[in-house]
Amino acid sequence: MTVADESRIHSASIAQRVMTPDDAAQFIRPGDNVGMSGFTGAGYPKEVPGALVRRVEDATARGDRFAVSVWTGASTAPELDGALAAVDAIDLRMPYQSDPVSRAKINAGLVDYLD
Image (tube, rainbow, N blue to C red; front, side, top):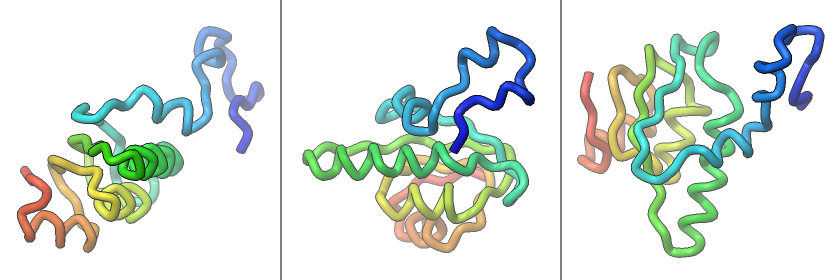
């Protein structure tokens, strides 16, 4: 993955903020409310959720719990909702989701949900 593509980013102040998904995921702490874009495959974040899953797996291996509240503008895809739900990284999901793994956790009372 190319971190910064100078042909796309013309502002130096913005270009210096571009980082890897793993670096971006370091800003997310357990218990945070995490806002992410949505609208199915077109608008949801593709890489940061996977980086967050890796952080959750590392925390779990140490015996620590790492979960966040996920707020999106619309539905996402399995790489976000499903991946985070599979590692028990979601405390609260809102407003809309359509992932079967998340749905199962919500229906089992393991994830709080507001629509």
